[in-house]
Image (cartoon, each protein chain N blue to C red):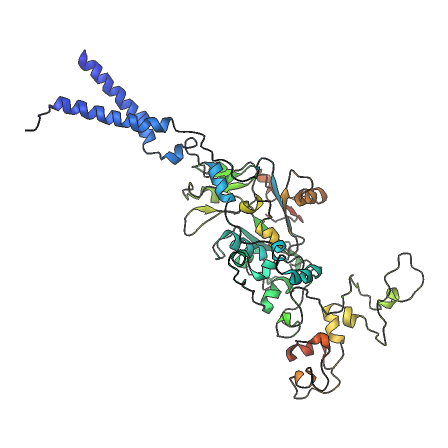
Length: 256
Length: 249
């Protein structure tokens, strides 16, 4: 025969086991190691570098090899909607109007002229993530999935990203986009897998006219530091206070 | 009193459940790992840093392709990385499968050299629809050294000057003399027909000395072993490009 159990005992045992179960389940989480940083496997010391980038609008020929190299290097979808870097063409007319276009993000080069008469000046502007020192995208991320590393590059933890898209709205440079298959955000990280091995980003390697310069801002002998010392540079949308680390040569009003 | 203590125990247990239990249960361990709502940035950084590279850079290509590398290093295309045209080397290095030698169409050359108002004016630009006829550019230009076998171009802006010998001839003493002509002239008078920019150059090279009426294939007579064979440095060229330099008038 089954042992009869009183209602009082049932409630008591039930409560005890539930509370006990919760306590037992909670204990390991409370004492979990809060500093499970994985050991630094490579010899790269990220506290010894601070990366910077220079784009020279006066040299850029708009061939779009950087866009192609970036897509192949970083497995960015080939469609022109998804770009870690792209090239824009600016046409300023004698009437003072500015026209900007970027057919296929510059991936296939620029085949035809813009149909505007009376062109005062025209030039190409390469665009990529500015790796801001004061990044609005990091500020708005509700889950802390995007962050700045010690060497000044903004990375995205795509396992952690919930795809809410706040950072796409927050970035004033339009550097971020959704990966179509993963539904998480992606953007240029200056080829972090290359620069952390001491190799130039793919777009810098690909540029045939050296319109893209990359290097260590803390090393006075680096190409970037030398360029910054020798040339007058400006950044995009300086009034926003984002403090970009992509510097441009060839200032022109209306480029942003 | 016993029931009171039991009730308070129940309340304490309930509070513990609400404030500790509920906080822990729905939050996965990964989230608590580095404080609430924080990812393990070091782990993620390592992940980004460990991704494989696709482009190897020309300094790797030289290990096997010394000849092409040497030629490329001397030429005007030395700033164009091997993998720009040949594609990323990763698979080629890993498996030995020949890289996709990129297409050699006029459009590919045109991505850099088609004339566009937006390009810097000192960059070499041509009318890609007409330059050298309709054949492929690589018929005349070796992509590794596009000016191989061709007379050197004037290295400075002409600014409307037409008489080269005014500066480069045997001359009055100069303060900083321009280089003298590096070869004998043998009756040649127009320097720019060989050394000028493409627009001038093409129009002034030797004209065909006979009428072309009805003839379309120059190589029918002028091929190697023909009546008047083409010069050695023209080897490999096709009839389609002759008339671009040797115009008939």
